[in-house]
Image (cartoon, rainbow, N blue to C red; front, side):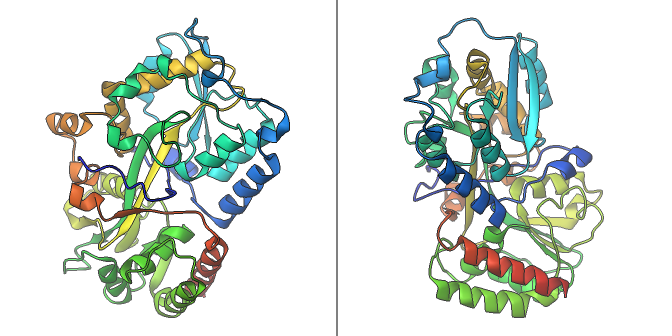
Length: 401
């Protein structure tokens, strides 16, 4: 893929779903960009104020990491089930004992970091790109000492230099993906390719058997993508039209709101049509006893792009270990293991070729062509978020009535 990741604005990122660990996955899924996440995280950052609450001055690059001895501990705060155990275990054998804690939303992450005021005890966090400018402004994350992370040179340049951190002073790509849908070909016997097709099938063959992401922005995206409207619109008239269609025309046909159907509903054939993320859909297909029954669609004409990022929080107690880990995980072989576990592109140079050589299954659901990338658009947290969530709440209420 030679085309850079879309960099036209703030990027909405969500985290991935990994391998066949159903119980852990059920406990760790995120309801990304819910109203609580927006209001809570935003309020926390606003309350913090510039300069991390005013208790700290300028932060030096590397948060104290100078290339000295690597500490014996490393604490990572990340999305649940989002890190390859093989990579974690192998790094642990180099010295540091690694502890993983998980969160379910950016609100939870940011609230903890803000409340801790640099004493969270975490060495690495994985925020989403849209929040990084605020995290930088409030000194909640600190600059990386890139001299200690030479393997940043092994990250594909198209995944570097994003708008939220143009010089990658504070962050580096962990994984990225997109949103589409998957459908049961024994129920829907025609080819579907667009969001208009999705809506039509929802109202016909898949009526009463359709699930949407439990995510206000993703649901709004269906309407805006299908109708050729910028899904970052702040025009309330657009939201009025979205509400009318969703509540009146969609709700009677929706059976559920599920952001992680792969290991549950999909395996039980509960739904025939599911809006979903590429990695989770891939996992569901691979785990199904009849994988050929399902078809994944990167729906046109437009859909979303998202990315997660490695960062180091202010006050990280083990900065040398944190930098050593980032360098370790960015090594292409380890990045490949991460990709193989979570099912999303981790951005390493040559990772697509590695996947082909090792015959990774369904690579077309991980790696995308230039033409496909051109259809993926960044999302944004903007002044329409409250209205977006209001429509989401009304749709859920109408669907359950």
